[in-house]
Image (cartoon, rainbow, N blue to C red; front, top):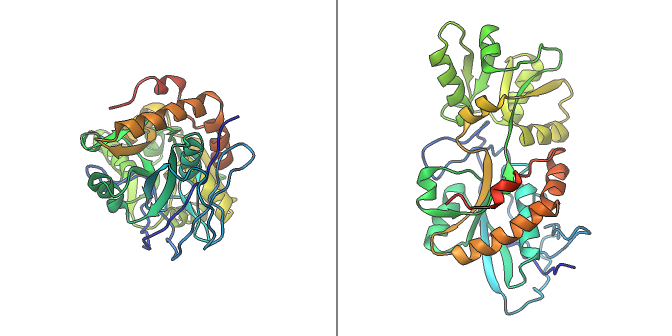
Length: 325
């Protein structure tokens, strides 16, 4: 039987997160591929809980505290921006949940030499705090890019992101960008994000069958509303986020269809999500990787993915043979 221990959640910074529809903007380490459509609420929480599967939940009420079972353990601080749903969720009581958080909790349940705490801060501070040594792990649905890899160590992947075309339920399903372009369809997109960039690149290569882009800074919820009410024809959205928003907001007049693999590759260079560490913290990275491989092998990652996504988005087994950097 695996060991469990206390997992503390310390929320220290309160900020309102602006919505970024679809994927994060390219180029800088301070941007990301997913969307934040929520606000971080003012609270300080400490909690310790393990569910029946051995995966901890941050579900304690504000002010509760359980001392870690290993008082001599090293404290590890994991930094997050507190969004986007369903990867990272800030509950109404200030506790943290979501796929990324539940996976990291499951990892540290099997690492009794560490006590885990979370800090919620603005996204840009997540990575700069790793560099300065203020935090030890970045957990924010982080993708791979070369610039980031030059400054941080990557864990094994713990999630595989996928994208879907979203349309009104009675529309003829889109099968590709060329299909959408041939039908002269209109898409909403935020300027500079990966999804919009991919459509712009398609348009450059297909001047006679272009997709019209209505540029917007509206969040995912508004984009889905516009598709449902016919203001726009379709959107390209992270599949996990689409599932979450349909459940949360009750969008009943929408359909989704998977974006083809070659077009998903045009959206982002890497479809996987990783935890990040400082360059001098390889020992912690190796400990986390050891458990991530166990979680893949014993089906825990699949179980958590099905809980949040209603599908298995655990990475393929060969992704746990060698780290990306």
